[in-house]
Image (cartoon, rainbow, N blue to C red; front, side, top):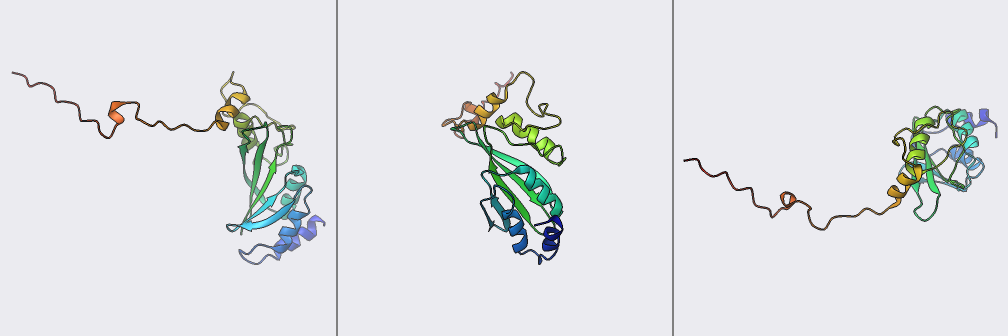
Length: 181
């Protein structure tokens, strides 16, 4: 399907309803396994996504990248990465998984991907080969990406008792100072 046909198909979309031809365009992206509507948004599941082909199709359709999010897999070096696209009428989410801890960078062609990819690299140790500026965005110097990923994968712990007597709901207010005579 050519970009011109995909643009014409998207233009034929009717209001807020999911466009069947947009769904067809998403299914045509290499690596996309399924496309469905959930909570008013289109979701494409693409475990072996060709991210460059996805970016090209979305650009041809005039759909812009909003952001990119990631979820680390605690038992492996892989992460789920979700590309969130936005057009006038809908949100399109494309979910994939890293392969060997990496995905090709969209930043050389999609400026909106730059900071999100750097943040994901800092937090989850996902590499984005081809990124034009892979310097840390939020990771302090001297801290390895694996350190933050390990912390993000660790289950949160909740204190059972307050660590300070002042934080306890049963704590009595401090005694008033002695009266001066």
